[in-house]
Length: 285
Length: 257
Image (tube, rainbow over all chains, first blue to last red; front, side, top):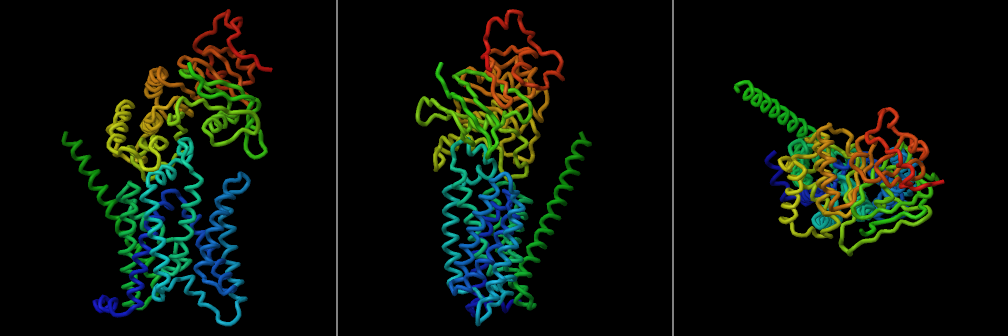
């Protein structure tokens, strides 16, 4: 186990993996807090799977799969946002349709791509050990933009997320913010695919904020704790995967859920003790 | 008394469905208008129109602001539309009422916070300022939302059924508070409870697919029927404020065809 710390400094691929985990934790912590607070988890799952269509098309056309996935998933996200404003289409049905459609398009185009067939498994389950320098640069740019946007417009984002109707009555450009944020969700998702893969990705955006929400009810603090929890979880997952040779994406998800279990149990225990104390005070009086 | 806004022959709805037809009403400073009508009659649509969430199909909606940076509306939505698990603190909810005032970068934070606490004190819930929304009861939440609506010192306060989910004690306090606030601002209140609001409001708007503006707070069951405004007043039995005999002769309500 100790040797891995030495290896991190020795091997470029491990260094990149840890860096990627760190950068993804920041983006997923911020965006994930927004997603869970607004209950957009299912929407985000839809965008994640729809992005696979973009990856397939990009391979077929011979362009960068990251760019293809970003274009496809941002457009799907906007599509869901537009569709769900119409009264005759239910939002969750629209998401369900796009979810499977994106996957289908991706599978067909990857099948049609002549010659070298890209490794489907690495998209579905992630391959954090093959993160490239350009992946890291994309992640750094995304993080800078997202962090700046959330610092500048923290209050607007929070108030719109809490009560859109009221924000609208205050003449805040609610739709503008909604589209920007949904584009951030789509881009953050696509750039995180490398770490845990499409199938496991949603855990990265939901488990850390849910853990943070157990002990904090403050939007900004949940963001901070989510980033920290996310990085700790991803790092432990990586260690596990490296030392006992299991798939890294799955290891990270399992660590996340174990962390959730521990934090939740401790919090329930504390509540129980507090209640007993209070009861005792009342009885003593 | 200045005019705040008026609606001229407004028709409005969603998609291809018309909800309200040919609506005419003026809202003046210090008005206190009770909006009544059956469910599905268009009360919420009227509010959404005033708040600028939807646009008229036909007709005009005009605002008459006194100055460029005045806050026109304070808005108290129905509590049931709120996600009670959202991670936000009471003080931040109240501060969100200053959104339109402070522009992009939030203004003087310390001053705003003091103001928010002061408003919460008036509403009687300043001790809850550090609570999160999930820890509040229905009545406490209403007080917090009222504080949010008031912090920007609006010219017009709009309340959407503030008397749901609250106890009688709070309801009475709320109406007394509104009466006091009405000296400084116009108020539009949507309510099911016709019996109670008629003793506080100055005028009544009956909304059922169209709008009958009754320029008095006294209204009879017959009048309600003539406005095609079937509301719970029937199940409530007698309405307080029995109408004076000569009331009809005053012609103090608009005649609509």
